[in-house]
Length: 258
Image 1: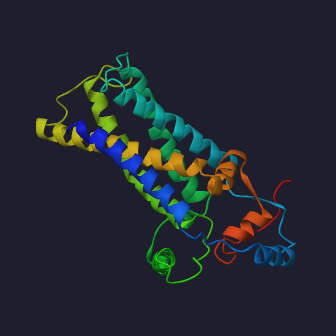
Image 2: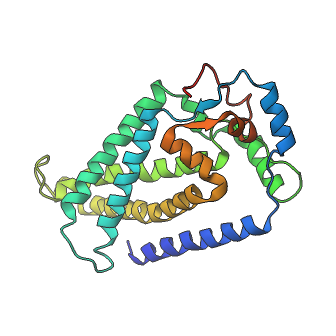
Image 3: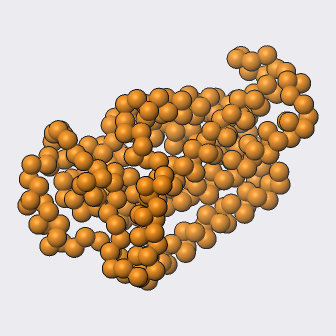
């Protein structure tokens, strides 16, 4: 693939930042008002003051995956822009760590977490419509979400496609380099198949550039900081839970640690 797509992805990510930041400045924000949140908090004193949003293992997976993705991006694209160093070994080691973390996440999310809470399905169509109507100003209030907002779930789907594509193609590409794990065999696939492997791996890489830019941008926005803190410390307050979430769609049970 053409490496000019790297600059296109970088440009698209930066333009998204500018467009969204402008929208946030000019738009009327829809948020549960203070009086309504006060009433909800007074009526839900049975809830623990601190509510667990992410378990320790979920947070550990997130930060391991974040570290490996940044490592993969830097080792893949810095040599392309002229910064030369011995990147190959670092790159494939980070790729194996990423692959292992994805496998762990699939098992952990399937058997130990609420698997369907992060997915997009037919049940989410009314929420999508309501979100669009709210953004267009046709209604005064956007719907409250379950545990994960619609944007988070759409991002999860995108990063899943990119992550799995880069992992599978990366494992195949390890046949073309010398490692202690594989006997080098560049002839395991036909030349045409190798071409598609490289194209898919490259597209996943440049796509990840834009996705990472968007993710970091939302993580540091002031109104999203409460979500970022939850990914660091694991918990949100009872008030944040009532202010941002639909209690029928994300039901909190038991007591969280103070």
